[in-house]
Image 1 (cartoon, rainbow, N blue to C red):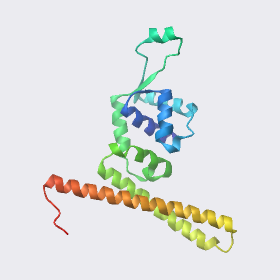
Image 2: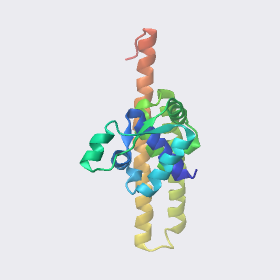
Image 3: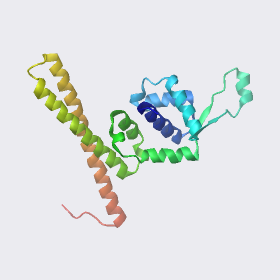
Image 4: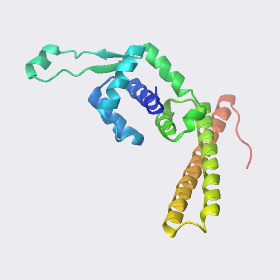
Length: 199
């Protein structure tokens, strides 16, 4: 599977983990929940669903009232459900905190399912994403220094805009990381029955 296909696979499994959905609902949910999938088409969704069915991670479920559907003249909608193997595979994907999870498209999808991700994995992904963006900030700054004298004012503004955007995301990640660490710290004290005596 290509990079975008694997991201779509993860997103589909995550949404079906919440509840069974038919294709239209699934596409709508993908478009509304995940910004990176705004342009998602049925052309990319249905091959992904077929591949997930073949892998045994989801099943196609026929409607419970085929007679009523036939009477209304509407075409029956296939409902997609996660299998036990699919749930297990989704948990494996959730636990992946490696470099692939820090990339632009992957990070957004992982972040969308952070509520179901354990705290240690969340922190590892956030810190990895931050280190990736800090490298990008250095790259932007170096490019600005190199090209400042050679490019026109608009190109320079575009470079500055890129730098500002990445720096803003790094600040946001710093806040999230601090929050995660505080949460882990508080949980540790609750589980051990100790309190922080520092003032």
